[in-house]
Length: 300
Ligand SMILES: Cc1cc2nc3c(=O)[nH]c(=O)nc-3n(C[C@H](O)[C@H](O)[C@H](O)COP(=O)(O)OP(=O)(O)OC[C@H]3O[C@@H](n4cnc5c(N)ncnc54)[C@H](O)[C@@H]3O)c2cc1C
Image (cartoon, rainbow, N blue to C red; front, side, top):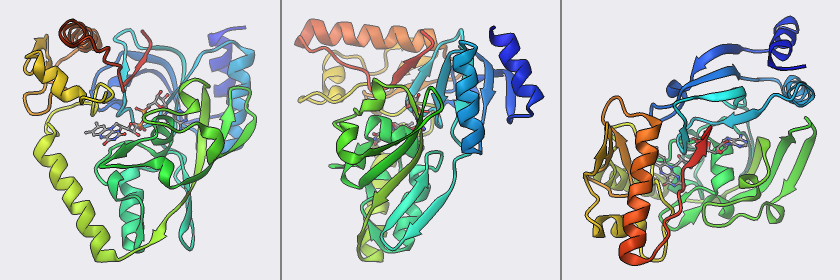
């Protein structure tokens, strides 16, 4: 029992698509991360459930990845199986409610909602993540967040069993949900939106996108805000210790936005991690504040 047999079995069953020894940097917005032993991109729920059962049986570790806009993957890569959620793309509208596959992009859904004159997702216009990743962290911006529109979530647990959660059971808080502690594969999310005015909705989205372009270093690979915002604002604390522009290898604290770390070209995950630790140390020393990361570390 082990990875070799597991891989052979998936091939025999023609499950997939499967990618062996796959570079993960192409699946992250930071463009860093080593090789995955095996990447699997399911499109069928029943097949995915069986793969999870087999992974458990063969003791193969499982990592779930949306579009990699909130993760730092180690240079050593990830052992075992990486499941990509991009195959879960179904969107079903029922008046102002929508059921969405976890691989759908937040920005795409927010545009579709705007076209239908539905309000509630304008904040998501410039967030590059998937709906699944957004549930895990309760993504939000400009005073709004996903918990304001979520109704329920369907997931697969690591035994391949389907689970249903009502919003109250998700423990959604600032950049937090039960899925930060319990590893499950979020498959589908049901949201409820409100009827609004199309031109006002689109105007709000344009404003938010404009603010992002003005304030965020979107021209370089990054993973959004690296640290959670404390009462004083992580960016302000980082600026306060003079860290803007600090550099380790090709990883740099953005000159444009102190809570962003940009990849200037060939940054390694280890360099980004070192920079994160240096900033945490400096902020702790000067302000006594422990900056907590918003990005998730995988494979360290
Ligand atoms: C330029 C930029 C701007 C951003 N702005 C914002 C912002 O304003 N607000 C905000 O909240 N975030 C922001 N982010 C961060 C990020 O886009 C969001 O957190 C997003 O929701 C993450 O989704 P993802 O698909 O990229 O998740 P990933 O980075 O792929 O994964 C993040 C975590 O969720 C888990 N995960 C992902 N999908 C699933 C699933 N289907 N089931 C179970 N677990 C899963 C992963 O295992 C990992 O632990 C920004 C990022 C960038 C690069």
